[in-house]
Image (cartoon, rainbow over all chains, first blue to last red; front, side, top):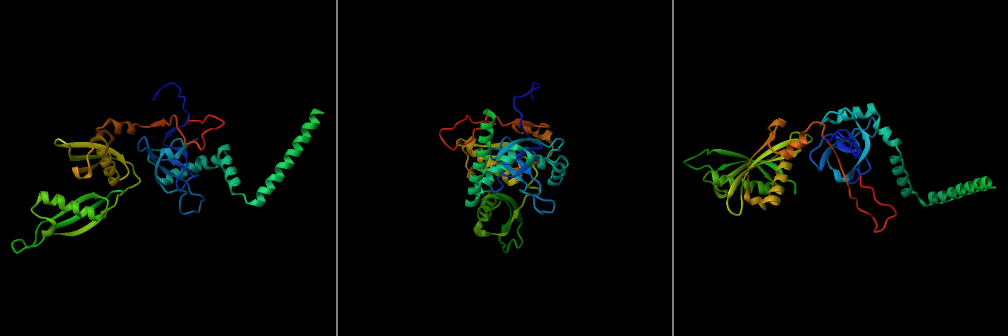
Length: 145
Length: 170
């Protein structure tokens, strides 16, 4: 690879945390365990809770077209690591929590919530927006007066 | 259609002159059992004086991949018929299972040489243990340690013809 700083920030590499964007596990986070070729890589994922018997998505080969690279990497991950080692690394670096707290993940959550609102909740949103608009306008009026 | 690897075992029917004929075992890559058995007879006819009518298949079993989650480098030797002659070839593939590698091989031969399934004989499929034994540069480049590459200029599908902002390509 070049020695000069690359313009690219996110690389496909062993240990990169990725977001799966299509298929039955869309929306889940996984880790690139190895690189098969320029189209695919095997991924491993975490367990949704410490007592869940199954990981969030089964270990499988995944095409890059249906992945999005995140800025999170598990450094020091050996190549072709098994699920257990990856899970240990994930816990050690707390990557899942970091992801959940990131603005990206929270925006995704908010969008999901918005899509799932029922009619009453949408009405509550209207009222809340009205209230916010009211207080903001009042504060602006006071500041400019 | 995903290919599977079958173990087909068969022999000539026992006759008075030969009450226990030699048993042959072949590893065949085929989409299903029916095709596997058919290919078995096709190859056996070329090796021995036996055909489906004068022989019997003793068993057909699917051979599952021992470690389907381990990425392996496969070297495949083939003999194929082109339009003007028949040639030997050696190709390498990086896949998870033998069946996947053979599937890629068929796709590759169809694309590069217009060779159909019927014109290709798979002679050997071997997992290449050591990275040094890999012969082809397109596979060697994927074995460099700490390999990493960006995904430059990703073109996503846009939901509408006109959008307010230019899309980001990374």
